[in-house]
Image (cartoon, rainbow, N blue to C red; front, side, top):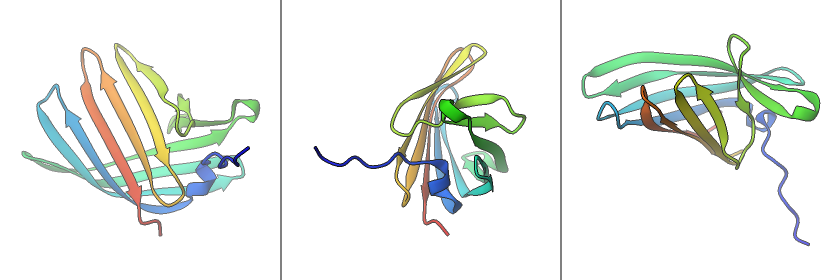
Amino acid sequence: MPATDAPLLPTDLLGTWTLEREVDDRLGGEVRRVTGSASLARLADDHVRWTEEGVMTWSGGSVEVGRTLDVVRRGDEGWWVLFSDGRDFHPWSVGSEVDHPCGADHYRGLVTGDARAWTVTWRTTGPHKDYVMVTRHSDRR
């Protein structure tokens, strides 16, 4: 039987990454881009802080953007991604789609990659949003 790779854990991604994001806003009819960095730092054995910062650009201008997430291990539930205020966002499930209903809109996400480079893709649909957001992480420092 062939050996299987161990699952990619948030602790495998510690460090600062170059972040390149493309947001194809089909509702708004434009593409926005973010360049910046993502940092994953261990706060405890079962807690990783995920911080992003960068500049979003589009045909009409640019703006600084950022967000903070926490990734925590919950015993038998495995790792979970939380919003900065502690609310659940989605399970950490590399290679498998995750869902996040948000009001009338629906987010469907996928994390892929390995400890050298990884991608987060979100497809968001609903009455208020219709976009595909692809974030590539590379060049870990």
